[in-house]
Length: 228
Image 1 (tube, helix red, strand yellow):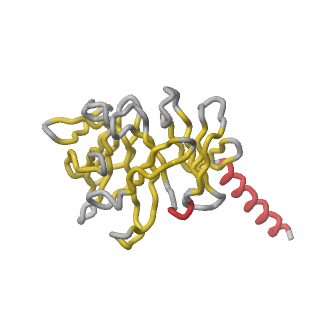
Image 2: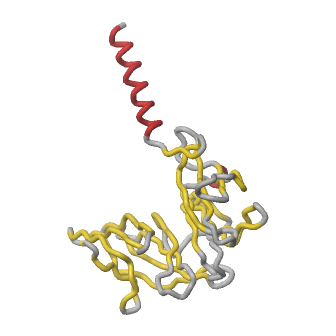
Image 3: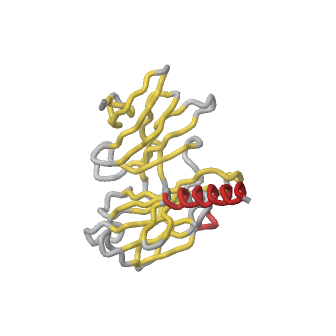
């Protein structure tokens, strides 16, 4: 009996640790979140991708009209698309951010479940598809938005997988109905991080050498400028 009680206690402790490892907003378990002015009111909205307990993929996208007041203005269920991330970026340079939802599904032209980058615009408390890309040039692990060349439009920057398993940074520009390739980086053994702040930073590793740096354009390619 003693061992049974100890076992139950350990299971309960593990459950509490799992709960404490999750972020919550108004009782919603947060899988991912993003900020951006998606309605053109010059104020950043908070966009949350929630999830159900013990689920790998997200469930609903919830939009709050202000980071502080947390007044909900939109909620849509994307669970059938198996969403795994959200991000914002102004891909067309109109001063209003689009919302991107990273999904894991098959498409008409690629009947295999894989990561896909979907882009939506927001209007009248609804999300409308702007581009449901089947995929990038190659399979990818992650992506984000950043204006690398200071032209007023955010490029899509992705970490893509080569056939030999090595990795490369790639970028894309919006061309009105979709995206086209822009610039690529050198090839690395590992790429991870891809953190967006005042700079777009990333961690790379090649031949045992690790570099934490910001992504810049140099000599017509994406270059990692060391920061540490």
